[in-house]
Length: 281
Image 1 (cartoon, helix red, strand yellow):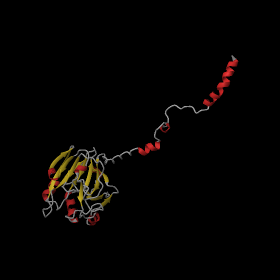
Image 2: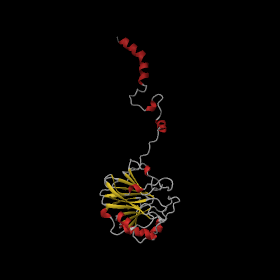
Image 3: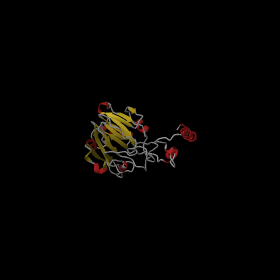
Image 4: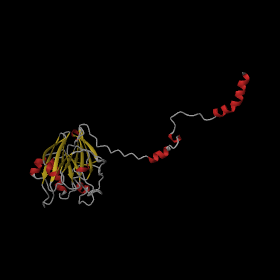
């Protein structure tokens, strides 16, 4: 028996040694590139379609206050503490050259007048309610928010289109938007428009002098005056006054912000009228 075992070992030893020295087989998982006809990691990455960038975040709601974002020209976006969002006079792509925010959603849109640089409500996402100029005159309601539209006098020549000014209140702060105001407010318009805490003042409109603009701001009783609608390098060929031309003719204190967006609470409003200059987009 020992002779038979020795005989088998003698003849099988080379075969056993050869297979023992070979690399053992590995269990899965293995790198896909080691499989037959599998693409390498580099080639897979090269062929991958880049992911679509996420839309920029919406302006945030502020506890017990409002968030105001100025996107340029006459386009103002206001967010209440509970997240109700109002867009006012979003600009179109032809007359001015500010960047329109991607995928911006709102609950409702207010349009003061039907000029291309103030009336592009179709660029707002979220299926908002839209209130357009003459159809928005009087008391209205959107998403539980009441606002009022006041029809303002056309320009002295009578050639201008209809213009509606708006007042709305978020979180105890009443805001006023004058649209394309052409002449000082009449007594009837003052009564209908009422007093506001924050006024978006179109200081670039040259149908009104700086003195008249100051008077309009005074008539509304605004404590915060935010200049909008003035000449910048993105205003195209529109004949607008510059911000400095307005500020040079105003004696009110000025507070400058290094951002297009500010948060306001009623308790933090200034006691005396102050011009809040937001960063130009």
